[in-house]
Length: 334
Image (cartoon, rainbow, N blue to C red; front, side, top):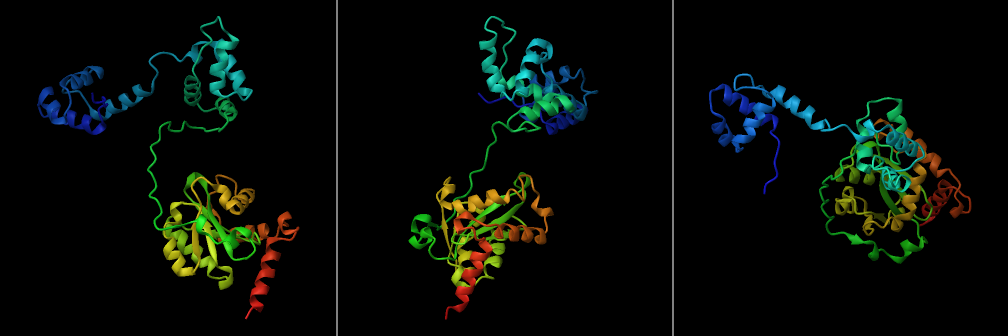
């Protein structure tokens, strides 16, 4: 049985226009592919006739009615329940913990029952103010608006013709030879912007790459531009995750002579150096940073600070010192 759909604003507009032109409800229903009873209910619900029905006004009323509860919310009419829920929220209980805890605390009181969905719904329909801010702040993720519960995500297209990390030379895993890099993106506010990060596995030297966009072509061009400034000996390989931004890896290899190896899905430890570095960078670029507003000069200043920090793994030398030593050694090679 097909699922019922509410009338859209376009259908209401067509309904209004055809009624005004003198067509019958049944004729309009056939044209719209609707049941005549649906259009009859539409008229009676809005207390309109064929001459007074207006599509825009009907659409606004329908949207308002769709968001109004059919009966008062339980938290609005039960002060004891509301006080208990608010107290537990302030004590950092999750709505589901509250819903499960109510029958145990009040086994003989049927008024002290509530689902966790009812708690979430009540919180997000509260008007703006200090109370709502305090209650939402008590939630674990502190979202100020309700996120979609069943968001359909488009499956990313798998990257073509890639080399797995299993085919990477053993010298890369041993960190005995410099010139092997790990890469990733540090995501900005709402995933709308990003910063490229490249970390050399032996020296932990970090390159921060400003990006105009995070599509495959922009990332390829920016990474290639940054890495081509290095001597050939320090451009051996790049280990990356299977993100779509590296879909042009073959063209990247042709431009830079750097072979790209891809880690397994959901295995961040296979690029542990880069993941750890991204964690350090969050001290300078916290979540929510809009990288489109951060200048290249600011980014390179952070790069210098990160590379100047002593690292235990380098016997308390800095990545900048370790990388400079490697550069000097490469320069002396015939």
